[in-house]
Length: 375
Image (tube, rainbow, N blue to C red; front, side):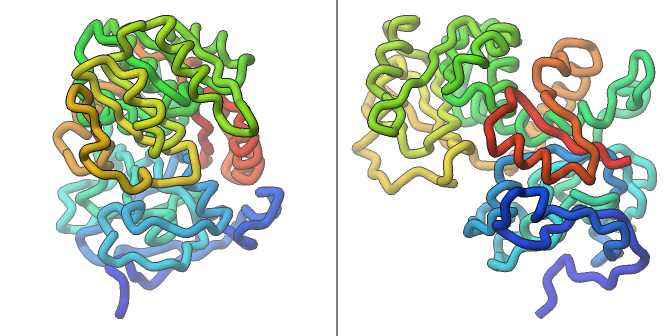
């Protein structure tokens, strides 16, 4: 039975394809195909988007390494889950509508965001000049009179805009949906040098929160301080594993009563051994946990949650009105200088350099987002 995204390609485009899943180095696995088949609309509910820039994510690395997929990662296409991986990665992009299906409500030329839209998981993603996005998971950028996009003075580059949708929303939702972080709160962010962690620091500081950030690399302390972290804890190790007890002591030396919001981007299963121990009474622990190998916490039972603590989970992209609010706030905040690109955008690569970008990401060299420019 055909999938909902099935189509008959027409024409060609440039795309980076996975030629040898799991091969190393990544540059031997991700290869530019100058004449990859260009998709057409599966139905009038779809759009074909001309990709201008691509945000790179940890899930891309898992896909390239041929690791088992999680049905939840298929987003709106979970019911059509399949284990075979598409040839083209990428689940986050910004660009312009090239062809709009008659049922979409979009028009040719509109500037849009695609993030967790099914591409790169269910079907071919956005490491390409064009990608398909279904209407219900395509999001408009602010209108041209509010957001000027380009490389000129006073304009915001496409590559900068590709830096915030996935990581910015994950941070925003973890702080303000999964937890109810209030202005002036104390916030602990474990894994702060990831792109999500950087945005969590920026968003918390924009609400006058006191932020405690953690990192495994002492060389990144200065960057975290620059973007606004009030205190930085360098995670140590013991017997080849994180020294959780030392980290707990270090955190509580800054906030003896614990942090009111704890965002753990490293290990979704550490909420009992770490999160609750550094969380203030009636505070919330959110084990978003995107940096480790697990997608979800280990099995647990409700009695594991102390009566004076709260446990929240980031649930993806279900709340459309808040998603659009977040995207508008971040896009305009970037345009107006509230959020500075040098704080969250670490490196820009050309499309054909996707393999090199993956290598740098796997070495954990970044403190922020990596982006592909699609000329």
